[in-house]
Length: 416
Image (spheres, helix red, strand yellow):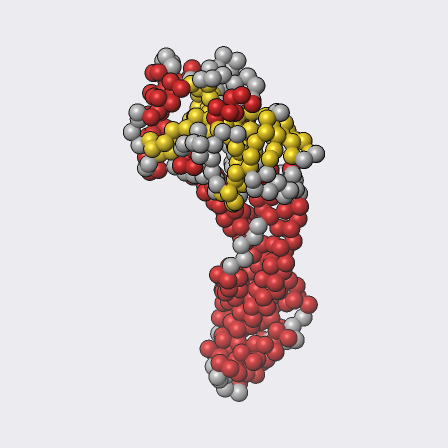
């Protein structure tokens, strides 16, 4: 018997199957849909996370006052690294000073060092006033240290005095895209010219000396944080250790538990968060795999029952010349078709399900929830899920098909 004939008989068996077979197909549809939805959402979240982690700049370390206890939010979720939530500091902590910058500039693997001050201030444009985050930067090295990119205009330069660069999110969200380049704004009663707008960011950047006059409680030699750009990211952990060692010595600290500063390492943070995301993806994938396992058991049960119901027909086919391999192929194709139909339905349902979950997640508040707002439906995922569904069907139907092929035609014809 030709394979084409075997396939046609298998298709007829599927078309005329009882409700039990279609319930089995529904089980496969649910399992494949769960796999497609979970994997696409997990891959989308991982891609979004990698993009946001990339904006941190793996070659940029940040030294902040206060002893670090845990990682804070990642840039892109709630703005830049949240210093208040990422570090736990005591009442006796000392701010960073120009002396610390001099110490850092003499260390190996360090390319640029920039101290900065930050705080809140009232910004007014036309008739609207808002409290914004103001950061004073060293305009001579800022563009070399920051991972931000300019959307329009330029970075600050040394000749700038009362000039500012605005974060893209500040312009877009707070002032509703109504601040054009070269316009005048007022911060704490002082007039500034907008010379640049960043693609991201939610604050105002101005020269360091000017920021000291705008912000309250900022000393002339103190810094809110120090950014360090390193040359070789591969030895970032060693550089962090060297920075901690030299600053402890410079600040007269003998024990690590008495450290009054912290050093954040984006490269280490990236590795930690990516590992967590991959673990989560594996966990969710395992849950989806359970659905597929249940579907495979359903296929096996359906095929065993189908063999019993069609025992007499198998005897008739063998009596008129059908070989064992012909019967084997008929039932293998039948189980494979169950997997194919279930796979097609599962892929379609999974595409709609992932889109629905992504839309629902993107509308909710909270950075952790919005992270699942992106999905990654790749051709490899869809085709792979479909082929996997067919493979599951054929594996589950292999034993029943083999038993059907070994039936004795005389016993099969006597079967009631």
